[in-house]
Amino acid sequence: MDFELTEEQRAVQELAQKIVKEELLPLEPRYLEEGRDELWPEEYERLKKLSQETGLWDAHIPVEYNGGGMGSLGNVLLMEQLNKTVVPFPRAYDMAVTYLLDFNEDQKERFGWPVVRGEKRSCFAQTEPNAGSDPGGMMQTTAVRDGDNWIINGTKFFVTNAHKADFAMVQAVTDPQKRQRGGITMFLVEKGTPGFRLGREIPVWVSIKPAQFELIFEDCVVPHANVLGEVGNGFRLGQKWLTIYDRLERGATALAMMERALEMSINWAKQRVTFGKPIADRQAIQWMLVDIWTDIQALRSMLYKAAWRADQGHDVRIDASLIKLTSAQWGTRSIDKAIQIHGGLGESAFLPLTRFYHILRHSRIGGGTDEIHRFVIARHLLGRR
Image: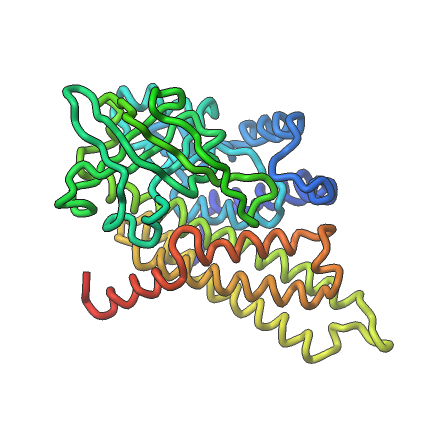
């Protein structure tokens, strides 16, 4: 791997840094004070226009969709800057982006292009009430072929942003004998399809407003034309999304928040005086700063390497598990130290640190628990499948 970034990658980094500093951080105090999870409508439109004008809106989109095609490493570099604040920056950033090149021509027109243009949103539905860490082995949602249609029955759980989605990417068992080895299929189920409805809200501490939902399918008729990829290939497609969209990008989010927390902690330690000295002079504080910095250096190196390998076409499932495991743990402990350095102010809603902590603590469960990723990595080390 060449650790020297390209001129284009550096330009994207610098542009994102400028936008965070000049556009997003000035909004953060009000955003935190009002306890928001999304932008004000007028700010969303203003920043969306800026995103489109600068090319960041679709920088991560494949060139086949007229996007920037910056790849996994480019997207990681961009997220490392934009996620230094809790104020979101509008982008064509949707779970379905992972599958833009998997859509057939008809699906590109109905789903792919509308997602790229920001006209449609999706959600990813794999987890079930009794199928979290072992979705392939425990999945109960089924799809039965009926001529040119499929009949789906079952319940999905912890579906992020399902209430905003225009369609759901739903995994269902189509061959109970094969299950995750050729017996699970991915379906594109559109909002308003008879037999498909939004169930309960699931309040979780990672968001102010409920963003996790239950999806219920009762004799839901979905046309065969809405099968994503091949029948029986849905579990592999799900792993593709989890590897690239979820796990590597969680690493970038953690890295961004850790970097911001370190910067805040250094500035605070220099100005906060106790017993006649800045707390930056106290060894206890210095060691916490060093611990955070050390975690940042290690995570950045692993993350860049994993993203680079993904761009070269390598299988990065183990890399992604390592990134997911370490970024969640190191991010959580780094933000905890930053809160400690800030004292009572660190616990307050005036600063983004508690928001960062909630997001990163959730990452130790969402997208696969720490224990599951240790299990995955251990199987790899022992040569087991």
